[in-house]
Length: 214
Image (cartoon, rainbow, N blue to C red; front, side):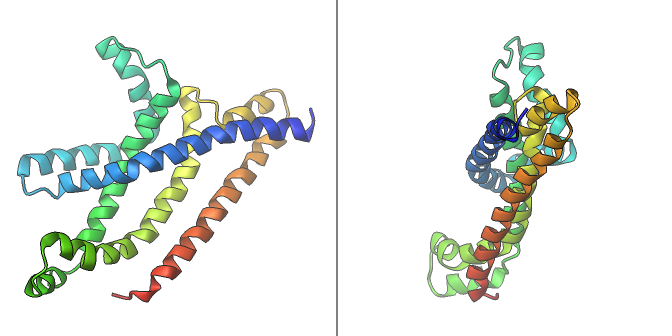
């Protein structure tokens, strides 16, 4: 068992983590905005239903949600979920879109009503007010909490092993079962490097947004 062989196997597993991470972000970021609009809707039944859904998802473990997505379709509807990677993605996207939606909502509600009123006085339409006045303020407000959630997502991808998605920790665990422990700690290097890059990236973005101090 050489270092090169272990590295190749762990890299193959980490690719699964990266795939879950990238696809979750790709789908959860826009879906979270849709959920936000639902929770902020003036149509009370839709707003209430959305808020209850978000409360349930945020109040239960992601691990439980993985099991629900994997087993409920087969046990309840007779349509088994055969693709475990797909099950993991569905659970991750639903979970993180709910967390992102609360971040978006906080960012939007954090902009004072005076900003909207000033735009109306200037004769701007609602869409002009949002895109020209509000949007950049919202982005600045949500970058720090979004960066925290995205870094948490990197680590949470390891939960995919619970439903037998062959990610990096599953590969390392096989070696631990054979009495070789160092690959288990070696996985930490992958996560630390990935999160280090993301930390630098978000730090750069925050500095770029420092021009606005509202």
